[in-house]
Image (cartoon, rainbow, N blue to C red):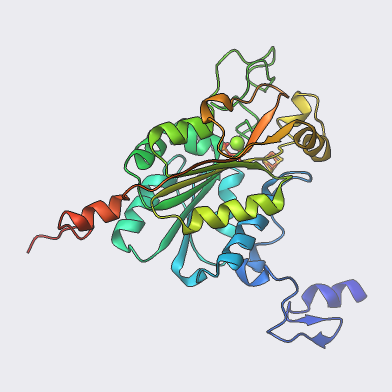
Length: 297
Ligand SMILES: Cc1ncc(C[n+]2csc(CCOP(=O)(O)OP(=O)(O)O)c2C)c(N)n1
Ligand code: SF4
Ligand SMILES: [Mg+2]
């Protein structure tokens, strides 16, 4: 049977032909753990696009992937750490930022990236988020905001808009949500941007800028979760959610993050909100005579 033969064929061969190692199936292949694919994400989920933009930014910025470490918490977004062919860590829920902080202090040469979800970073991990931003800790935090706890069944998150229906707010949410770009800016982040998964080129560029920025840089990615957010809120497919982003996104660089709240199915202000210079945690440590971590002799 043809199917059987194909299934056992090594990935370096296709239809009996040997593929040159230098020409992978896709430019991103060398950055992915192909043995972990197919991924677990639903059809129409924005996470594949978000990951693609991140890998595109890594290629564009020419960062050495051997010097990049990716840290994720728990959630559908947190699965990213398992799919990238780099040093990566899938930590406990809400603890990606403290783990990443330790990694950066132990090896300051590493480019440390936290890639996780709104629930992981802003609910259980919220305290770590604001304090890492306050200290201007040297790391890039990428938050996939789908307005929900996707992985665990679509419960309310601290990003869920007022009136949105979720599995734990079937009559509509009555909790005010965090505005993540305002939270990051107010906490001290030196780079803050927000894009949706519709804005792939701009998102990739923003992630590249964040990666090259010293200190705490933050990129929020508004991303569809058709399975557990969209279908409760009249956007049943990923495509409908993308159509909403197209209709309601307003590009406004330098906008006041306080005015960038997202209401249910309302406008989404996207762009670069903050790009300022401030001494980073490691710069201050080195300036004060410390070398990151001082050891007693
Ligand atoms: C200590 C602890 N509490 C709760 C959970 C259950 N849990 C796993 S993922 C998750 C929410 C993830 O939401 P988010 O970060 O937004 O990821 P998404 O699935 O939406 O991408 C929760 C509450 C857990 N794994 N550990
Ligand atoms: S539950 Fe939502 S966030 Fe999770 S994979 Fe499915 S669509 Fe994506
Ligand atoms: Mg989420």
